[in-house]
Length: 150
Image 1: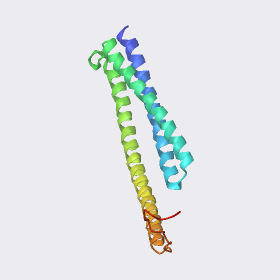
Image 2: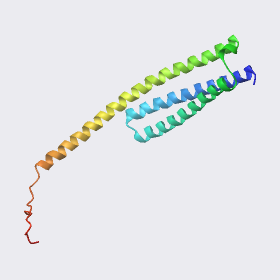
Image 3: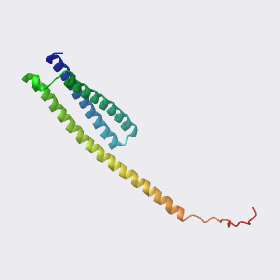
Image 4: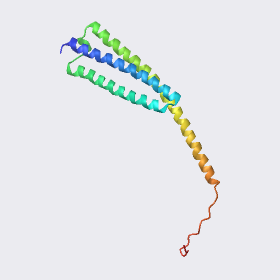
Protein backbone atom coordinates (compact mmCIF):
# COMPACT_ATOMS: atom_id res chain seq x y z
CA UNK A 1 0.00 0.00 0.00
CA UNK A 2 1.36 3.40 -0.92
CA UNK A 3 1.98 6.07 1.66
CA UNK A 4 -0.80 8.27 0.26
CA UNK A 5 -3.38 5.48 0.46
CA UNK A 6 -2.41 4.60 4.01
CA UNK A 7 -2.51 8.29 4.92
CA UNK A 8 -6.02 8.65 3.49
CA UNK A 9 -7.28 5.70 5.54
CA UNK A 10 -5.41 6.89 8.63
CA UNK A 11 -6.84 10.39 8.25
CA UNK A 12 -10.36 9.01 7.78
CA UNK A 13 -9.95 6.96 10.98
CA UNK A 14 -8.82 10.11 12.84
CA UNK A 15 -11.84 12.02 11.55
CA UNK A 16 -14.10 9.15 12.61
CA UNK A 17 -12.52 9.26 16.07
CA UNK A 18 -13.17 13.01 16.26
CA UNK A 19 -16.81 12.44 15.32
CA UNK A 20 -17.16 9.68 17.93
CA UNK A 21 -15.49 11.78 20.63
CA UNK A 22 -17.82 14.68 19.90
CA UNK A 23 -20.82 12.35 20.23
CA UNK A 24 -19.28 10.98 23.44
CA UNK A 25 -18.98 14.53 24.79
CA UNK A 26 -22.64 15.17 24.01
CA UNK A 27 -23.63 11.94 25.78
CA UNK A 28 -21.50 12.99 28.76
CA UNK A 29 -23.47 16.23 28.98
CA UNK A 30 -26.69 14.20 28.86
CA UNK A 31 -25.36 12.01 31.69
CA UNK A 32 -24.62 15.12 33.74
CA UNK A 33 -28.13 16.44 33.10
CA UNK A 34 -29.65 13.08 34.06
CA UNK A 35 -27.70 13.10 37.33
CA UNK A 36 -28.87 16.67 38.01
CA UNK A 37 -32.51 15.77 37.36
CA UNK A 38 -32.20 12.39 39.15
CA UNK A 39 -33.49 10.56 36.07
CA UNK A 40 -32.20 7.05 36.73
CA UNK A 41 -33.66 5.39 33.63
CA UNK A 42 -32.27 8.13 31.38
CA UNK A 43 -28.92 7.90 33.14
CA UNK A 44 -28.78 4.16 32.53
CA UNK A 45 -29.61 4.63 28.84
CA UNK A 46 -26.98 7.33 28.33
CA UNK A 47 -24.32 5.30 30.14
CA UNK A 48 -25.00 2.30 27.88
CA UNK A 49 -24.71 4.50 24.79
CA UNK A 50 -21.48 5.97 26.13
CA UNK A 51 -20.06 2.49 26.62
CA UNK A 52 -20.96 1.61 23.03
CA UNK A 53 -19.11 4.74 21.87
CA UNK A 54 -16.09 3.82 23.99
CA UNK A 55 -15.93 0.45 22.25
CA UNK A 56 -16.10 2.13 18.84
CA UNK A 57 -13.33 4.60 19.82
CA UNK A 58 -11.13 1.70 20.96
CA UNK A 59 -11.70 0.03 17.62
CA UNK A 60 -10.57 3.22 15.82
CA UNK A 61 -7.45 3.37 17.99
CA UNK A 62 -6.57 -0.24 17.19
CA UNK A 63 -7.01 0.41 13.48
CA UNK A 64 -4.72 3.44 13.69
CA UNK A 65 -2.10 1.34 15.48
CA UNK A 66 -2.52 -1.25 12.74
CA UNK A 67 -1.64 1.32 10.10
CA UNK A 68 1.51 2.23 11.96
CA UNK A 69 2.59 -1.40 12.40
CA UNK A 70 1.28 -3.09 9.27
CA UNK A 71 2.03 -0.46 6.63
CA UNK A 72 4.94 1.30 8.27
CA UNK A 73 2.95 4.51 8.39
CA UNK A 74 4.94 7.28 10.06
CA UNK A 75 4.80 11.04 10.23
CA UNK A 76 8.33 11.30 8.80
CA UNK A 77 7.24 9.90 5.43
CA UNK A 78 4.42 12.40 4.96
CA UNK A 79 4.47 15.73 3.18
CA UNK A 80 4.20 18.91 5.23
CA UNK A 81 0.56 19.39 4.24
CA UNK A 82 -0.32 15.85 5.35
CA UNK A 83 1.57 16.34 8.64
CA UNK A 84 -0.40 19.53 9.27
CA UNK A 85 -3.69 17.69 8.67
CA UNK A 86 -2.74 14.92 11.10
CA UNK A 87 -1.54 17.41 13.72
CA UNK A 88 -4.76 19.41 13.34
CA UNK A 89 -6.81 16.25 13.89
CA UNK A 90 -4.74 15.31 16.94
CA UNK A 91 -5.18 18.82 18.37
CA UNK A 92 -8.96 18.51 17.92
CA UNK A 93 -8.85 15.13 19.67
CA UNK A 94 -6.82 16.62 22.52
CA UNK A 95 -9.31 19.49 22.93
CA UNK A 96 -12.27 17.11 22.93
CA UNK A 97 -10.61 14.88 25.52
CA UNK A 98 -9.98 17.87 27.80
CA UNK A 99 -13.61 18.97 27.61
CA UNK A 100 -14.78 15.38 28.23
CA UNK A 101 -12.49 15.14 31.26
CA UNK A 102 -14.01 18.34 32.72
CA UNK A 103 -17.54 17.04 32.21
CA UNK A 104 -16.64 13.68 33.76
CA UNK A 105 -15.15 15.43 36.79
CA UNK A 106 -18.40 17.35 37.26
CA UNK A 107 -20.41 14.13 36.86
CA UNK A 108 -18.23 12.42 39.45
CA UNK A 109 -18.76 15.25 41.92
CA UNK A 110 -22.54 15.23 41.36
CA UNK A 111 -22.71 11.44 41.69
CA UNK A 112 -20.63 11.53 44.90
CA UNK A 113 -22.93 14.19 46.38
CA UNK A 114 -26.00 12.09 45.49
CA UNK A 115 -24.33 9.01 46.99
CA UNK A 116 -23.61 10.87 50.23
CA UNK A 117 -27.23 12.07 50.48
CA UNK A 118 -28.57 8.57 49.93
CA UNK A 119 -26.13 7.12 52.44
CA UNK A 120 -27.21 9.68 55.06
CA UNK A 121 -30.90 8.87 54.43
CA UNK A 122 -30.23 5.16 54.89
CA UNK A 123 -28.31 5.80 58.11
CA UNK A 124 -31.15 7.96 59.46
CA UNK A 125 -33.67 5.25 58.69
CA UNK A 126 -31.48 2.63 60.35
CA UNK A 127 -31.03 4.76 63.47
CA UNK A 128 -34.79 5.35 63.63
CA UNK A 129 -35.42 1.62 63.41
CA UNK A 130 -32.94 0.94 66.21
CA UNK A 131 -34.54 3.59 68.42
CA UNK A 132 -38.05 2.22 67.94
CA UNK A 133 -36.84 -1.29 68.67
CA UNK A 134 -35.47 -0.12 72.02
CA UNK A 135 -38.87 1.23 73.09
CA UNK A 136 -40.81 -1.85 72.10
CA UNK A 137 -42.74 -3.97 74.59
CA UNK A 138 -40.94 -6.76 76.34
CA UNK A 139 -42.66 -9.97 75.48
CA UNK A 140 -42.95 -12.61 78.10
CA UNK A 141 -40.69 -15.51 77.42
CA UNK A 142 -40.98 -18.89 78.97
CA UNK A 143 -37.96 -19.97 80.95
CA UNK A 144 -36.00 -22.70 79.33
CA UNK A 145 -35.74 -25.55 81.77
CA UNK A 146 -35.00 -29.07 80.82
CA UNK A 147 -37.91 -30.54 82.69
CA UNK A 148 -40.54 -28.12 81.43
CA UNK A 149 -43.72 -29.63 79.97
CA UNK A 150 -44.85 -28.39 76.63
